[in-house]
Length: 420
Image 1: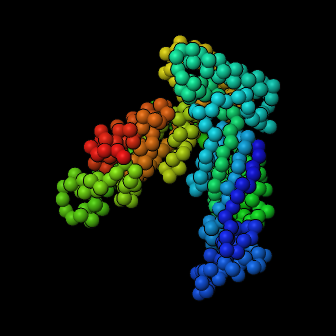
Image 2: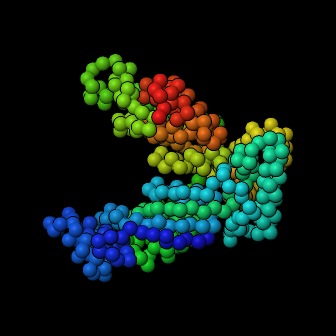
Image 3: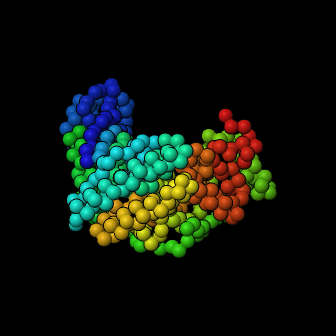
């Protein structure tokens, strides 16, 4: 694993090699009537004084928000897909990750230090990569183009497969990441925490102060056995009246459909609905593959509580694999990996075809955003199937609130408006 500090924000008028001076200057705005441009100049003249100010305000007064004015760009390389899930569970950061959907994957995986039998681990991982290569060729021979063949062959890849990403994060959220990852059960996640700290601490020591984990940080990583019986269940769903109550305050008393139409007539395919839709909430229990979860976890404005991966939930087999007559070999490889994962006590050997359960809660605004991306014809087929089923369930309970929820490819059909 490697973490590289690629960049950070600095004061272009008063150049210094740290973002701390901006944080210190902005922290003074609430108590000092001087123009903020002058506050920035003063902070930049004396970096150590700015750092002392940050420590006093963040650590002494507890005003951590000033750390949000420092922003870092970080390269994260050679990290396993399992550790990626741990890192990308944090909401207030931006990630762009290497895609197994578009890139052919070579035999490159993380061998965890806590694995009790390194030889057996390496043998199982090697077998999965060999099966991936074989399936890729089989799907191509069956007439699938290279892109779709890669998309479905990756279901055989283990969660040990390494990836890389670019990450942008402010100092407050980075401190939260470092502290919580230090309490993670995965040794790799704990090593990632140290690598993040070492990359950033030299340029912003006054903003990374609360980095020692607490009991609550440890509790946050616990994952139960799968708690639900169904593939997809709508556990709770508000009715149209949740949003209509606010719309009536805006537009006056009228029929619910007229209230919603008063908003929808102005809605375009790229528009975001008003915040009134955040009054609406729907909760789902979803059983899904690691591949589909990789899509779902990107929607970090939702609440997602995950179970551990479990062979008891079965596996997801791509339809193309079944259609090409390769399901038997595919299933044998995945089941063997699952047995090895259970025997060795490591989640790294579960594959992208293995499944977990997620309790998902989304407000109406986030649901519309989710459907725009995942109910679209360009979306990956696995998450698109799940999104479509979720949408059908919610439409039965709240047909007006979700009336315009659809993938971009279905916009004209659903809205009756041309897509730009």
